Length: 159
Image (cartoon, rainbow, N blue to C red; front, side):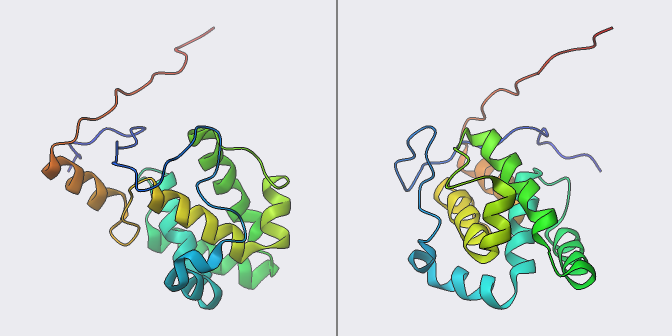
């Protein structure tokens, strides 16, 4: 069954926060600005990571699969930041966010929980309901009749 929503298409959302282009909406250490997510991330980071990954991957991966892989990597290596830092990079590039306060992998290595909380808050502040995943956000947007931004095609076939 194909989805009526195109991939590579982030929805337009009314923004709760004034997102200045090129800046994070909250700081890395603003974890307590969203206490429920802070607690969830501290006790079960695989859920927060899974929610982030599903939105960043625009529904091509599920929260459950990403969270399970995060847990497996954490159990095998003890260092799930090996996996999660790549999603921070992907999200940063999409939203043109700075690599701050240092490199993505170093941020995740030194403060995994803070990094996950910041990424979760960023997506939430951009209008995503993190609890319903990508498809749920697309359906809510369609019901509200919000116009979608055109899909940008990068490059074409090259020889």
